Length: 143
View 1 (cartoon, helix red, strand yellow):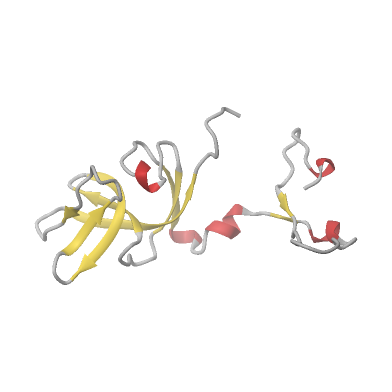
View 2 (cartoon, helix red, strand yellow):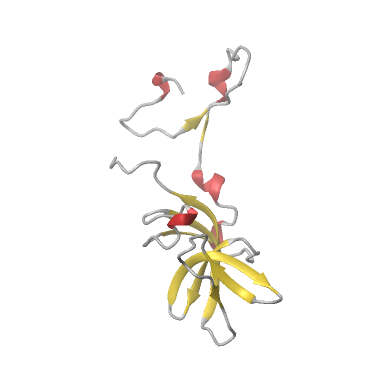
């Protein structure tokens, strides 16, 4: 994006360009600028997709930090390895989901200090939705 395309005041729609790794750029390249609509990029099922902000660091080893925004699709059935939002014993949690014949349903983080949670039929447990994207700041500075 050239300096002339970026204006801080007025906050125009974000644009992207197609870059060619080698060769001479097309003189018509300016005509290929399209606004990025995050709803179109991140939301496949609008009526069942929700956004939530993370409160805590239990998944920080997994790259999910306090203040990050999750895109959650409630229409998806969880598969082993999916990050999910679940409701366990009266509290929401974000963990990875695994289901095996031997151990049943397990929730886990890659953090070695956090033990996997093996669920039993007596647990008050619901998969609320599957996390499809995690949005976070690239740095800590306030904008």
